[in-house]
Length: 79
Image 1 (tube, rainbow, N blue to C red):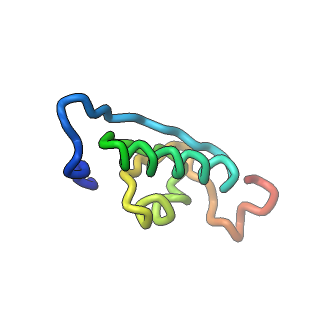
Image 2: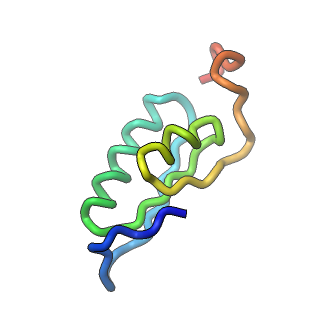
Image 3: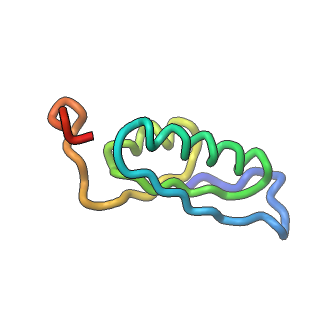
């Protein structure tokens, strides 16, 4: 788990954001999560496990949603 930023204080919130679908669903939630983190909150992004590396690569906390989606090359037309 990613530790909270140093600016987290007693009024910081842990916020769960969810995204299901394509990058068009995921990217806005990632931007919102980064904005929340910059303001001292602890965002958690829940999405299909397919997006784990993309989310954690941005330093965001990730939780998987089920059912798992197939890898991108197998998911043509699904997402």
